[in-house]
Image (cartoon, rainbow, N blue to C red; front, side, top):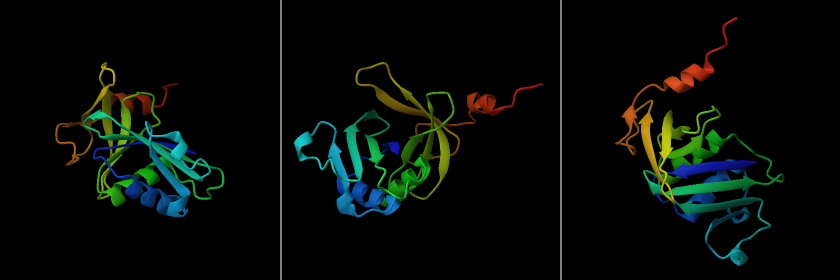
Amino acid sequence: MAYNLLTVDPVGAVVVARALAGCLGVAVRDVDVADADGDPELRNWEAPVLCQYEAVRGDLSRAWDIYAGESVAGQPPEGEVAAALAKEAGTTVLFPAVEAPPSAYWAVTPEGLVTRVRLEPSDDEPPVFTVTAVEAPVPQLPGAVVTRFAEIVREQRPDNP
């Protein structure tokens, strides 16, 4: 199972490994966490959980790509993994929503608040990520406007006969 998370703060590899191990039911030694630009020869490619991260710019600090292999018995939904990381790391974690708008994300705070957020990448290379709106106030995202997301409500409305 693959997980794609974004963190507001730059979380350390040890903290991420501990959070993933607890959430996925594996030992910390079975979680390989590495910088995407690091030396691939130093990776433990046999680890049941592989995680790589890269720095991002803007309101977020890191993007995390996580893969839990088939041997990992516990494969919770992305929101549970995000919540475990948020609590362990003490930072807000974003994960993609299933709705069609590419800007639709969920955020989970260290305290457990889960709310929708709108994440907008710039056209720069590499992009600058800005959280432009939230449905509930998130202390780590003070620049985001608190609002309802009309585009998501429209998508969830059933078709009229």
